[in-house]
Length: 137
Image (cartoon, rainbow, N blue to C red):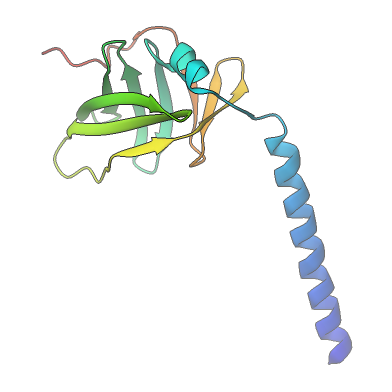
C-alpha cells in the first residue's frame, strides 16, 4: 500500500508541475497594459467576449460612458475611468436582474487585437462601434 500511495503522490506532483509550467508558458505572451495603453486600445473601441450565457459586447465612449449589450439584446451602461493602470466600471443602468458590481480590472495584451482581463476574460478589440453597442438615447 505504501508503494501505491507514493506512486499516486508522485503522479499528482508531476501533474501539478506540468500544469504550473504550462501556465508560465502561456502567460509569457501576456503583457500587462498601463493605464495609457488601456485608454489607447479600449476607449473609442468595442470588444466582444464570451459569457456563460452567450456573448456580450462592450463599447467605451471617449466621453466616459460605457455600454454593454449581451447576445439576447439586453443592455446596460455606466461610467468608466482608469485608476492605477486598471479600467474601472461604475454601473448606472442594468437590464433586469443582471448580477454586476462596480469594479476595477487589469488588462493584458495577448495579441495584435486581443486583450485579457485579470479575471481571465479574453476578447477581440474592434475599431469603433461597428455593431452599434452604444445605446440610442
